[in-house]
Image: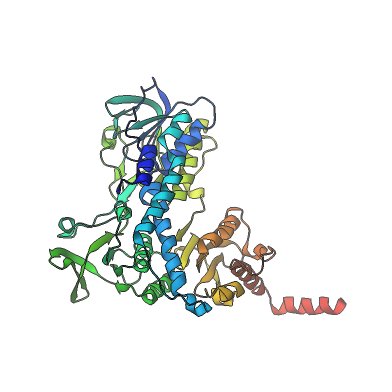
Length: 501
């Protein structure tokens, strides 16, 4: 955790205290949790916090808080906030505000990130969880048998266990990449100087977010992506807007790029890729890998206890988050396609209920029962919940409202984007939605709430949205749906009612 300044020292004192002594294990635990990322922390704290005397142990090999706190959500959003400020200043002239000079102090940007991260870390500290009555162990966890876990030379017996060991950055097997050195989300937030020339490998959410952020903070960024379009798992219209914005920002995009080698030269790190029949290369100072995540399943000795897993997909679980050993559960990035902090949080709640409070299998909750939103934090943001049109197995209708028709978006000068709602054909049942807007992440929860509570889009037309807000786009979508209900018959009826009135 570099640099070792005041904030990082404070962080380490909380998430992996240097003088921490593992407790003496109890005779048997009701629940042992492997991994103190979001899923593990929620399972442990949620179980212990009930105040019914459950014996809980939590094992972490590195840092409490996991990726989200230390090398993921928290530091990246701090960086993105600073980058957004740069973007706002750069576009201020169209609002009549002229900035004479723009200067980014990257050192201060990163120091602010470390200060914010350190402050948030108190919630995830080893001391806090100890005070909740949880036995916190630091060390590498390994199953000794179906009811025993070894850690740091000690054995922990358990009735139930949860695997929440998370995931790590995928490191592509490109010749010369390891020798040249590269950054991932696990190392990039230790930078103290902004790379002058940066290559970002991968055009998914992580790659796009960090590429745009570093470009705005001063790097000359080249973004390489193996496919034709960035964010290719997203709604194509949404992905196209983000891609156009990155081009407008001045990033160099290399699409259909198959990276074939990396070499160290006197000028820097030279990346060579093939695009179609052409071979191209570029020299940079740093390489950032944002090509996805892979689960941490090795070294747990899962084979010895009959817990099935896949090196790419992670621990195999059923819809109740049980592994192939029913008394052992898993949650979070180690077993789920949804690799989001909020997904890990809600999966952990399912584990608590199913592992501890569902006798004889009664009243269990299912992972498939969750309605999961997510956000890509580019400018503009892309938020989604539910199904995409291509995945729907029923006939659908799409309602789309461009942000350029929303008064607040016009006054804000933020007209790029839309609200798109996917409905079951012939009804107002919401199957999914995509929002592209600078505030998409804040807006998507209204749609999610409607879906969870089985509220049709038509009913949202009756929800009064303060004027002017960008969320009024959702009300406009609801009005647009209601207009589709007008037919010659209903118009005739309305004419009659008007005459009678």
